[in-house]
Image (cartoon, rainbow, N blue to C red; front, side):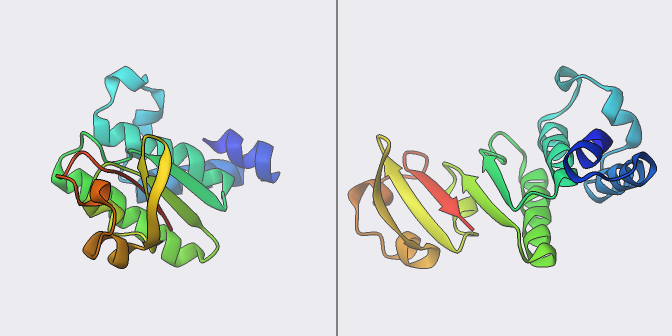
Amino acid sequence: MARTAVCLRGTDAEAARREALSVLARLDLPEHLVLRRPGELSGGELQRAALARALPARPRVLLCDEITSGLDAVTRRDILSTLTELVRERGDLGVVLITHDLTTAALAHRVAVLDAGEVVEQGPAREVLDDSRHPFTRSPAGTAEPTARR
């Protein structure tokens, strides 16, 4: 994690280490977790670890592909809350959420709905999700594949 800040931003090693520890704490990940292999982590730990690896780069855009799939409701809420806080704090951070979960998509400012790889509907999230025009968007939960952009 610290190497990201050193290599991509030129941060000195000690400052990068402190920043990495701060990111871990923010994401409720214990320090010893960095020594574990991915197969030894829970789904929520894996998703938070992915964020922990990305954040020291200070990206302008985070691409989150199914970041909440397979997670329990509490972990899902915590991860989405963290993303929302990051966007609010940073001001220059955009998040692209790729999800099958319309509840997650509803957090976005804008939504694009894909059917077989083609955009069939897009616009402000509330408008698209509350007043869908395309049959695919109105289809039963779990079959639509919205791509939400923040």
